[in-house]
Structure formats: C-alpha cells, structure tokens
Amino acid sequence: MSFDLDRLWKWYDNEPSLRCAIITGTGRAFCAGADLKEWNVKNSEGNVKDVEKWAENGFGGLSNRHGKKPIIAAVNGLCLGGGMEMILNLDMVIASDTAKFGLPEVKRGVVAIAGALPRLIRTVGRQRASEVALLGRMYSAQQFFDWGIVNKVVKLEDVVQEALKWAVEMSDNSPDSIIVSREGLLGGWEAEGPRDSTNRIDGGIYKSMEGGDNMKEGVLSFVEKRNAVWKNSKL
Image (cartoon, rainbow, N blue to C red; front, top):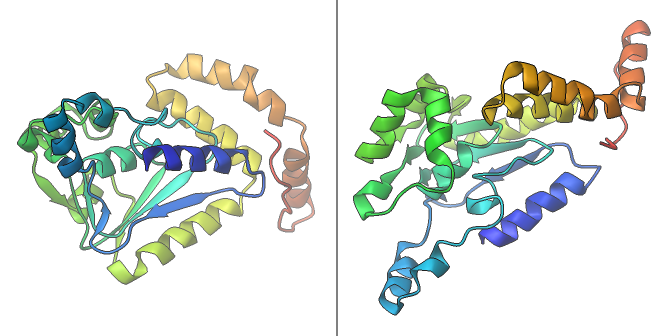
C-alpha cells in the first residue's frame, strides 16, 4: 500500500490541474499503522527485513515526503503508529472529536522509525515528544489540538467536509504562491536555517515564479478590485 500511495502522491504533484489533496480513512480507523499480524508471519519466516521496506517517501508515501503541493489529513478515527507518522508530516490536520492518536510501537517491541520522532520533537518539544514516543499512550484530538499537532477538531460527520472547506480556501489562492510558500516552510521543517532557506528559495523556485502569469494576475486583480483568475502552475 505504501508504494501505491507513493506513486499517487507523485502523480498528484505532477498534475497541473490539482492544487490540494485530502487523505482520510474509513470505518473506525484513519490508519492504525503497519500490519503486525503480517509482521509476525515474516518474523516466523525469518523475513522481517521485507516488512521494514517502506516506499521512497516513507510510510504511506507521506511520512518523509517533501513533495511540491499540500496535503490535508481528515482524521476520522484511530491514528496510530504509521498513521501518526504520516500526519506529523502533512501540511494541515483536521480531526474528528472521536479520533485517537498515538505511537504504541514501544509496547510492541518496535520503533516509530518512519520519520515521526524528529518531527514530533520539532512540533511539541522534547519532553512532550518523549512522553508520546516512550510511554506509548493514546491521546485525544483535543489534546493534540492543544499541542499544535491538529489544526481543528470537529464532529465525526463533519471531518471530511471541513477538510474540503480548507482545501477550497487554499485553492482560491495563487497555485504558484502556495508551492513557493510551502517550499519556504519546508526549509524550516527540515532544519535548514532561516538565512539558507530564504536564499535557496529566492535564488531558485521564486525566480521561476517571479514575473509569471499568476504573479501578474494577482497584482492586476488587486488594482482592478476583482477576484484573481489563476492559471495552473508551471512550477
């Protein structure tokens, strides 16, 4: 599944007409992580390494994804292990009030090795990250909202619709500006210094955007006091 999703996100990044993606789950779970029953079978066969092979961009093609365009999580239920590793690296997280989060790996003799640990520290600090990773507890959506991991908590029946509202609001903005702004944010997320990140963006992808159709349209629409009509990004 990780490999299929990895291919999907790469296709999404390369499809000019798409500006924002949403990932959600069905039933009780958003994603409960790796299949430990399969892992047990591989262990008994001596093939544990096969289980440990993730896609290029991590669990679900997301836990270590850099990518070009934003992805919003609509967390409908259990978000554990690999599921939590995915959402920690997504751009925004909308959660149902019944969603539960956690990294229970330590209770099963494994480790959250797909990218969650350093990202968790950056989001909530060392002490809270240690609590989550070393105790293996489960947390409510409200707790993770208070800690800054979740953007908004809504009723279960509204979680996908709320994520769609955020996606539409984002898609009303310049697709070029979204891509370049996101790249600047990722510089800080990946521990690049502010000066280095700014210089890299300014000397790279921003130059491709500068003077382009969408920048001209944004300025012109402001002067003419109308809504901008954006073109698909060529970045």
